[in-house]
Length: 539
Image (cartoon, rainbow, N blue to C red):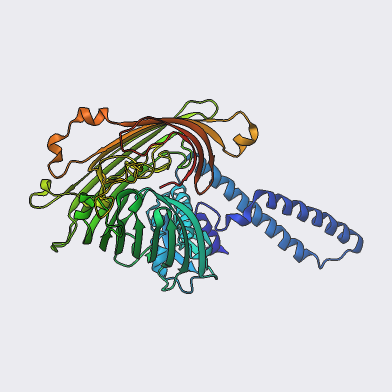
C-alpha cells in the first residue's frame, strides 16, 4: 500500500480517473452511510460483534474514495491554473496479434514530445485519431498510468487495440476528375493488413464519361522502417476516348510511386507507356503529328493548403494549390519532355446574413516542351489545357479546367479535321469539323454568390441558391506561336458566362441545377445557353 500511495503522489492525476467519478463516489458514500446506519441498528438489536471487521473495511474503502476524489479535484484546479510537468517513461502496446509494434509506435511519437499533462492529453487524442485512420483496428484505447516510483513526474502509456476481424471490404462511389474533365463511377475491393505493416491492398475498376475506363491495383503502407512518409504504389491501365472533341484515343499503362505524402506536400513519380491512336483517320494535322507511342517518365509535386470550412459549400476561408509536373526523366528519344505549372487560388467571404458567402477564384497554368530547340516543338497533347465542362469550380480545386456554359473541351485553339478520306467536308455540321487541340497557356476566374433559400425544409437540408459568373481563355505558345501572342488580345478574347440555380449538397458530391447564359464565345466554341443539371465532387 505504501508503494501505491507513493506512485500516486508522483503522478499529478489518478492512475485510473474513470473509476473516480465524483457522482459515483457520492452515490457510494450515500449507500455506505445507509448501510452503516442499518448495521448500527442491527448491532443494537442483536448485539452481534462479528460485523466490526466489515465496518472497518467499509470505512477504509470510503476513505480511499474520498482521497481519490480529493486528488482529482486538486488535479482539475492545477490543470486549469498552471502547466503540470510530466514526461512519458514507457509506452506499452497490447492486443496487436498481427500488426507490428513499430507501426503503432510511429503513430505515438507525439506522446514522447509532451512535457506537460495538457500536452500529453492533446497528443493522446491525436494519436488515437491516427490509429483509427489506419483502418485496421476496430477499437483503440489509451490509458495513462503512474511511472516508476524512483522517477517522479513520469507516466506510462498503455495502448490497447483490437484488430479488425473483417479483412476484406468493398466500396462504390461517383467522383469527378478535373484532370480528365469527366465523371467516373468507381468500385473497388480492399484487403487490410496482409503483411502486418498496416498495409492496404486494393483493386478498382472505374468507368466514366467520354468512355473512360481505368483498371488499377495498388498498395498503401502508412509506415515502413527507414521511410519517413507512407509508401504508395499503383499499377493502372487507362483508356480514354477523345474522338468527339479531338479525334484521338488515349491509352496509358503505367506505374506510379508516391515518394512524399504529407498534409501539404505530395510528390509522385510516374513511369508509363502512352499510345495515341485515331481510328477515324480524320484528325487534324496537329493531332496526326503526335499519334503513336510515347514514354512518360515524370515527377509531379503538389503543394496544397485548404483552410475553407467546407469543400462542398465553403462560406469562409481560403485555399491555394500549386502543381509542378516535370516529364522526360529518361534519355529515350520517345520520352515526353515537358514542364507544366499550375496555380489555383480560392477565397470565401461571409456576409453574415442568410448564410450568404461570396466565393472568388482564379486559376492559371502553362506548359512547355524542353530540350534542344524546344520553342519550335509542340507540347504533348494530353498535357495541354482544355477548358469547359459543367463541373463547379467552387469545389474542384485543380487548375484552369472548368468554365460554366461550355461543353467539355468546348473552347480554345482549333484546327479543321480531315472530314473524309477524299477531303470532302460537310458544311452542315460545324461542331464536328474542328478538333480542339488545347492550349499552352490558360487562365480562368469565377465569382459565386451563395445564399440560403427562404423555406425552412430546404435550409435544414443544406439546399441553397446561387448566382455566378465565369471567364476564361487559353492560347497556344509553342512552335513559335509566342511571337504572335498579345496579352491585350488574349484578355479581349476571354469567354464569359453568367447564370443562376440551386445546389443540393451531399456528403459525396454537389448536385446543381443551373441556367447558363453565355455572354461571349468564339466562332468554333461549344457554348450553349440553357438549363442543365450537373454534379461535382471535391478534388
